[in-house]
Structures are given as structure tokens and as C-alpha cells.
Image (cartoon, rainbow over all chains, first blue to last red; front, side):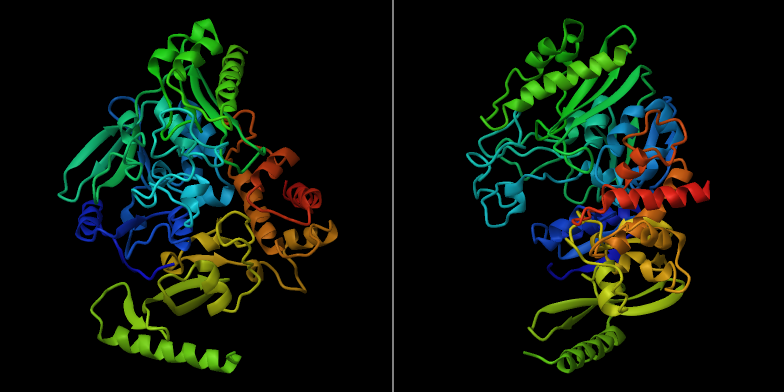
Length: 316
Length: 211
């Protein structure tokens, strides 16, 4: 790990201003992803801004009948919150399907949103990676691709977003609230928050230099059945090969997002109107522009089957 | 090869030099010093409580809580396995919650209460979970055991507190300490000897006595 200085931020706006002053600075909250990457010298901040003292660890009701989740709320506390369990079960389920008990006790809402890819070529500093070192090339393309993206990929990157929580937030139409270094705040719809790789896979989100996430809001509850189906190589503590986060209504209509298949939680609203025609029809719309490799083509069929089982579970 | 004595001397020299830097520095959180290879090192003073005792340390800002426990406080009961949050050998309790001590920095725990395996019981009066691991053979080589025991204690607390898990059928209901629940909740603690079934037995034993 490279040496760094640190400071403890006193307010969200101060934290953002401090980050803007030092381009090599990083915010640290739970640290479970950042410190792992710092040990590998994939992340090399020269300064850390500790945001843990900012009291952004609460849930409050919004005027619109939804909830505002503090950026620093730990994954365990968010998943266990009474209102989340009863009204946003999909979010609880997705969080509980991710990581381990120890990690969920530290990991925060904002940190989970910013979780970096688990592409093995991003993690291996001996390999070319456009995300880690822009312009160096992509060793994943033509490499071992079983776990990597099948849709929304580019010639520069085929990494996936590893988060379970993000899949739930996408299906639930979350909004990400931020503060910028000049003190201005903004609200970013989750659909616009995570980027596809394109020519700039190192730019993963809509956040600007120094911009700090302060909260995530959810609209009023949707009702219906909340299901998170995660398919992975072992029953617990593994990243998804594919996952489906869905809210299905009694009349069979619904909405869903898919994890493990793209650089961002994958949601195609037009595909949702096909739900009454069955999972294969939905999948066809969902993966209309898919570019799987021979090693990860199975993810298309796996998603179709996961979707079918979610629809089936919703009926019972 | 350096003798342990030389290493000790070097560390003391570094501490002396960093202490001097602290005295004249205006930087609030960290101070700068150079180590023996000429690299600039940032250090900071931290205060925390470990197993009920107040501790004050001067550490490199990069020092993880795990390294602070093992290298600075000689509390080597907590083990370093993968050092990347994948194996759970470093699990400790901070303010009563289990975390991977390898994925957190010592200075992030200012004024917090850390409990390690050394703080749970003594050889004469074992913590009930330690005693259950012994009577159920919940280990073979023992390397993962301190982390398993810290985690196991926290798991039973989490179930009591009503925190749901991935395998909870109804996440709005209070979870129960079933073998299925305990296995899921213990998935962040790897045991390469494969003592898993005996660990679940030990936990079931303690959970039954608590009920």
C-alpha cells in the first residue's frame, strides 16, 4: 500500500471541497472495497477523507411517501430496517445475498453503489486493463470470460458491476443524492448513475470530481412480491453469475433488473411489457443486443430460467 | 539478516523521529517521517480500547486494525489469513459488531471498543462459545478458530437482535437459530480443515443454552 495522509471530514460539503482540492484523494467510509484495492495498489490515493463522522446513517420518510437512506447506513442495518423489510423487501433480499456478515456490518450504501468490478484482469496488475490504466487494452477480451458481461459491452471493456444492491435499486427506481464541491446538491436517477463502458471504462458513474453521495431515495412502495434470485457458484458468499431482482404484481405485470450481465444493473423497461408472454420472450428483448462469448453465452439461458423461476415464485 | 534486536532498534528510532515530527507539525490528522528506505511515511496517534483496556499507539496511517492488534499490541490471537476480507480469520468485535480487522484502518477506530479472542475468556474460565468449540471439536489446526469464535458469538447476537439473513423464509419475521441460518451467517469464515459441522454443533449448543 502507498503512503497517504488523511483527514476527518466535518460536513458533506467540506468533504466534497477537500476532495476537489486534492485530485488524488478518496473518500473512505466502510473501506471494505477501497482498502482491498489499495493493498493491491490498484487504488493509490495520496489522501483519504474519512466521512464516517458525517451522521449520514439514518433512514427517514420522504414527503412523497418513500424513504431517504443515508449514504453511510451500513448494509446490515439497511437490510434489517423494519420499513425496508416490509415495503422494499427486494432491497433487503439483495443486500442479504451479498458479501458476508462481517463485510455487511462495515459496507455502506454509498460504498456499495461505487463498488468496483471483480473482473480478474482488473485485479491482476500484470495484465492490461482499460479501466485500471486507460488506453492499456483489455486482457479480458479473448481471455477467461465466464464471469464477464454479455450485454452493453464495448471493445474496451467487458467487466460487470458486482453489486447485488444496485440491481435492487435499479428495479426500485432509486435516486442518488449528492453534494458537489461548490456546495450545490443534485439528484441523479439510478438509471443514469452507472455508465456503460464505451471508450472510457474508467469512468464508471455520473459523479464529478469531489462529488459526494449523501443519500439514496426510493419512491413510495410498489406493493407486489419482492424477489431477488441470485445464481452463483456456491450457495453463499460469492458474486452472482446472474441475478434477477423483481417486483411482480398480482396481475402478473412487474419490473425487474438483472445483475452479473453488464457494466451496470441491466434493466430494459420494454422487456417488462413482455412478462405475460413468458420468460423467453422477455429475455429476447432484454438481450436483443447481447454480445456473449463462447464462455459466457450460458448467462443468457441462465437469466431466462432465473426469470421464469421468479415469475413462478410470484404466482405462489 | 537482521537480528530481532536490530529490528526493534529501528522501530524505536522511527518512533522517536515521528514523535519529533508530531511536535512541530501543524497537520491535524497525520505526521510525516522517512523510513529506513527513504520512503515518506505518514503516522498518526490513536486511542482506542482493546479488551477493556485503554490503548494509545503511534501508527503508520496504513496500519490495519489487524496489524495494530498483532504487531503493535502483541495480541496475536487474531489471525491473518488472506488479508483481503475473504477468509474471516481476522474477525474481531468492534463495539459489539463483527468485522474483518484486515479491511479497516486502525485510525478509523478512534475511541472504539475492540474485543479479540483474548478478551472473551481465559484458559481457566472460557467464554461459553470457546468451551463449546472445545467440547464439540470445532477445529482441527485451529488457525481459523479465533475468527470463527468471534463470528459465532456475533451471529447468535444478530439472530437475537432480529437481523434477517439470505436464507430467512420471511424477512419480516424474527429469525431462529437453526442450523441453516447459522451456516449461512458463518459463510464469511472459511475453515480449510472442514470443521464446519462441529462448529454448527457448538453454536447450536450455545444457542440452546441461551434460549
